[in-house]
Image 1 (cartoon, rainbow, N blue to C red):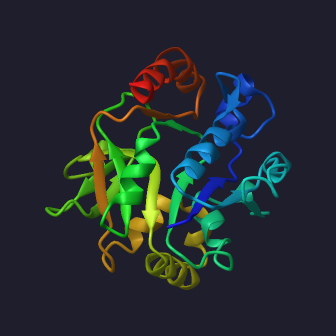
Image 2 (image 1 turned 180 degrees about the vertical axis):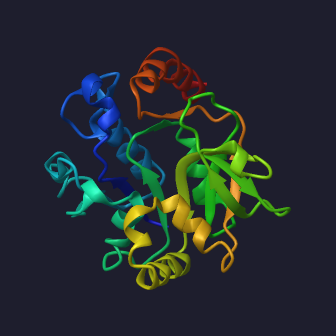
Length: 242
C-alpha cells in the first residue's frame, strides 16, 4: 500500500474564532500544521502518493503540490456536501488500496503502522473512551465488523469504541462505495464517509480495529484545540519518544 487520502474540504465553522480564516488542517501544534504532521507520518511509513480532497481555502493545500508527492482534487460543492462526496470525487484518481484520514487529526504514528501491517484489507480504527465531546460511537457485530455508528449513543445496541478518523480501504470496497453513490444521487451529497461505509456494510466486512490507549484527538472545537495543546500533544510526544 503506497497511497493515502486526506479529506480536507470542510469549512470548520466552529473553530473560526479560534484559528481564523484557515482550513482545519492548518491548525498549528508546536508550530507545525497538523496536516503537515500527517504528511510526514504517512511518508515515514512508506506512503508515496498522498491525495488531498480539498474545498474550503483549497489554495492552502495546493501549495503542497509537487512536494512530498501530494496531489489535490477540489470538491467545488464543499459548502453543501458531506465528506463522502469529497471521497467520491476522487474516483478517477484512486486505483489501489489506500489509507483514509481526516485532516483535523492529531494522533500517534502507530495508528498508521498498525493499519499498514494489518492482514485485513478493510479496517476502521477505533479507540477507547476519549470524553472529547462530538464523538462518533461504533457498533460492531460478534466478529468486530462494522454494524452501525452514530453520535447518539441511544441509537446503538452496543458501543465498541469511538471513531478515530483513520481507516484502510481496499479498492474493491471503494468501488462498492462508488456504486452505492451512483444509485443514491441525493444521499451521496449529504452524508459523511463513515456513514457511507455503514451503507455497504451488508456487502463487505469492514473490520473495526480498536486501540484502547491510543493518544489522539480531532480538532473540531476550541475545547478540542486547548486539550490538544495542553494535554494530548505532550502525552503523544512522551509515547513516541519512549
